[in-house]
Amino acid sequence: MKQYETVIGLEVHVELATKTKIFCGCSTAFGAEPNTHTCPVCTGMPGSLPVLNKQVVEYAAAVGLALRCEITPYSKFDRKNYFYPDNPQNYQISQLYDPICRGGRVEIQTKQGMKSIGIHEIHMEEDAGKLVHDEWEDISYVDYNRSGVPLIEIVSEPDLRSAEEVLAYLEELRLTIQYLGASDCKLQEGSMRADVNLSVRPVGATEYGTRTEMKNLNSFKAITRAIENEKNRQIDLLEAGEAVIQETRRWDDAMGYSYAMRSKEDAQDYRYFPEPDLVPVKISEAWLEEIRARQPELPKERRARYQEQYGLPDYDAAIITSSKRMADIFEEAAKICKKPKKVSNWLMGETMRLLKEAGQEPDSLALDPGHLAKLVSLADSGAVNNTVAKEVFEEVFRNGTDPEKYVEEKGLKTVSDEGQLRSVIAQVLNDNPQSVQDYQSGKQKAIGYLVGQTMKAMKGKADPGLVNRILAEMLIVH
Image: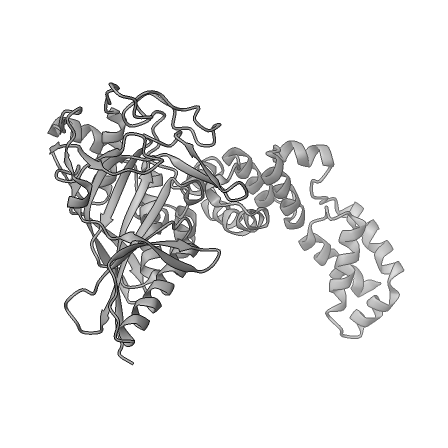
């Protein structure tokens, strides 16, 4: 069988984090009762007129700047005409001819090294509503709350060659947009969605194959499975001497296959024409400079600074900056306690463990940086030992408890009184004569059991190092 190369381009839709919709004042809040965030404009009532939300333009330009795009000083909106039940106007306001951003690139890390993925354009548009299918009643309902929610569509060049590269690209996009505050990019809530355009061709060929577009991809796992499935489907067709049909396909992640929805449309199928109810968008150089001045430190820049400023290894810096929320917590806690590596260790160790247990993502972390800084200081000073510190941290993580108050109220401070420890250790030695004899006979491991019995008697509050030292002394003369 021939060797084939996969060619992939992505259309990524991102819901912007504005409080109101793109052309009206309705709320964009997620999860409201159906059809409660609606008005004549976003439900397409005759005679209603759109008014552009300025914040949408600023977010779109900010994303474009972060992705090294050329910002179009004079962009316009167009009507994309089509009928579908969740599209109340029977057209969508989008940008075909003069999008707000052109060009640009995203750098991703691959097994072969760094790779640059081109950005063809970024355009602004409005979202459609949502169909809710009731299979039991064999009926569909329409919720227009999402109709008119502002989107940017980021269209890549066909530079991607595998599911791994696609995920790296999407992750870099997600992080960048989250750091900008332009969107939360929650795939599970639909605020970041990707359509995959995929074709295959024999290795070494220069002409592109016939591509298909796959929709309904709402998780990284679904995207990976859909790419592998479609790649294999197209190769099987070509090997059987059949043609790949250019079409739009819908991915069913539960069933693990895609099916044809409709033939792939061209621009003329939508009868695009300039939107008559909106004036062109003119972005002056002064306005663009204002947007540029507000650009935050982006993930790669932050990662490099953490290595230089705090001396973090590359791995630590990469993990922490992979979530803006976690990076913010790290920076604030490190500023308070002045122990950045210790803060990093708690975030990468216990924090990630508890997040995994709770089935949470780092972006949902509710950890108070001040509480984390206090815990680091308690553990580092020896006020609590490592075992107790983990117990306290779990309380801080789950309930937001102040660690200092918790340690005080529960009496968890490390006992460093030598007199008290010697008294307890003497009792442990008397209660465990066999272990004492084993140690004195040269079995060094026996001391570990005695340390454990001492810590148990002290309810975990003793200093393990001090316990070891005193035990070693008392075993000599016991």
